[in-house]
Length: 420
Ligand code: LLP
Picture 1 (cartoon, helix red, strand yellow):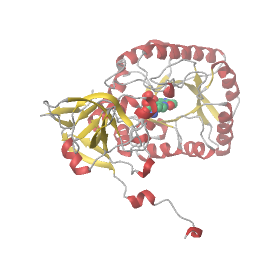
Picture 2 (picture 1 turned 45 degrees about the horizontal axis):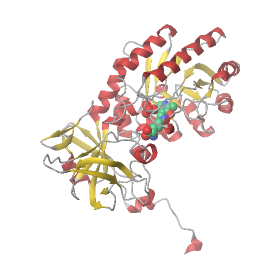
Picture 3 (picture 1 turned 120 degrees about the vertical axis):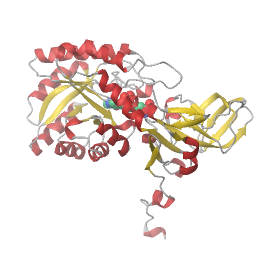
Picture 4 (picture 1 turned 180 degrees about the vertical axis):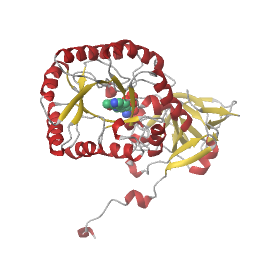
């Protein structure tokens, strides 16, 4: 459920008229609904009420400071994958003891920063990383709390590029090596073994792969305990899909929670979750204006002022996003469009062969379900400035990331003296 709906044929974000907002902000821009963000994190927390859980929001999905601050105020922790995300999470007021650090390539500098901050857990993805954590834990006199991210070899995820739990994927340690690695880690003084971690993919719309992976993890915990290894936490990652308006419908968080409670209840562990998309995805849309309606030789193109640099999901994952006119005209002709941006790539599209009301230049459309992996994956390709992000709360709105000036876009570049 989200808070984007039509009132008198105009699309609103909560109580804010998006046509008026487009006039004020200028297109393209992202707009997020605070009520939706709060609702989603609340639904997740409620599904696990009574259990010992840490909901560590996956910052990569939407890392805007205001978004993080909202989630922090709801009691969320953070799943971070870089020194930059760690810095953002701390700056937003997320307590270090609620932060977990995932990722296959943590550098010494990143590990040091996280150790000094006193985070809850490092999710260790390889033996060399274990050695680095041990070395730095000893050097700083602070053992690193760790869980190994184990790779259960389960196929899951809405697209090949967002599947992470197969043995061909770069993530996690091999299942059959896990027990030996835990034994090695237990003998180290620079790390403290705390738990088991896994994350099998993203936009998962079927409970079956979760169940297979979670049962394997429960079995591993039993084996590790039999080896004499105390395991007090189980991090189940993120990955629960959201409805995008087409494609498979994901299970409700309550069903996901019921499965998890069934599988993990006998273990007596703290459960950690790293939801990203489920929290932010349907809490945001991207508003973009039609520049031209181009009748090509074989297709009709709705050319909008946002490009693949602003929202890369269709280009990268063939992702479906619903597209809605900001001002709906019930009498409009239905037209089959390719909705494309101005970037010089054929992959610069938001929809292909999509039936939409005929939309004249100057009108805006909303690309729906763009709150996760939208702004966070944007770039300045084609020297296009990053687009603003706006937060709505009831009838209030605030720009939470402004559009930079062209001078700001160039500010970090320099031409060496010999070119003068
Ligand atoms: N934890 C780890 C270790 C992850 O790698 C991810 C996502 C998450 C949690 C959060 O997963 P979520 O709950 O959002 O599914 N850019 C792609 C998605 C990439 C997901 C990467 N990892 C997209 O736009 O579909």
